[in-house]
Length: 302
Image (cartoon, rainbow, N blue to C red):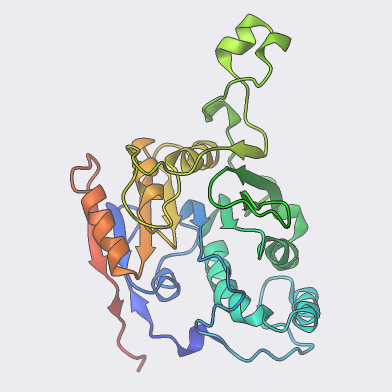
């Protein structure tokens, strides 16, 4: 397995620690975090735009023995085998992502929620595999974030959306508070009462939101920065004040910035030095204390 070949990392963190930004490989880092510590885990991994990721890959062999103990076993292995037969570069991306999803699930509290942010190239694979891995009963939503920027193809319908898959750790106890979410304007205000227009409507599972404007207040210069409005809605709905939020692929630190503004606490992980530099600037004048640390290689087991 990928994890077996990675150096073990240790991070000095407990639920009573300050907000934390960790520089290091996210899979190795999160393995050192205690189970069931986070109400919300948000993953925005690199999109597989070239269909070949080639990071920490392994040669996968389809077998009748489940490799993921405690999850969906035989069914999961069968589905992975079917996808390999269909797409011969499937493993290049999924073997990178799968162990991180398993760790995310371990780290979620019983009332916690996982948000996985992907594009159209991988979202269909992820939905099938997450259903098999964690159970279809844990699937909550497929959110479509629609935007309008970039080139427009004339040979097909232009791709102008991302997909965010939402899974809950426990379908009976997960936290979701729609009343805490910022409302949005009605698209046809003349068809509803003045009272409803003033209050606004609850968002659906299709979110229309612009990207981060080039000259906007939020802009940090980080190339994959996501808008605060998308993270605000996620954090408002699926966590409470004082809860811990975890982001494996922190990038510019938007998850942490929004979490802190909403009274949540956060752990952010990224191995890109540019991302760490951007977050240092972003959190330099932050009211909530933020610790920065490098993951430390753990000594070998005796």
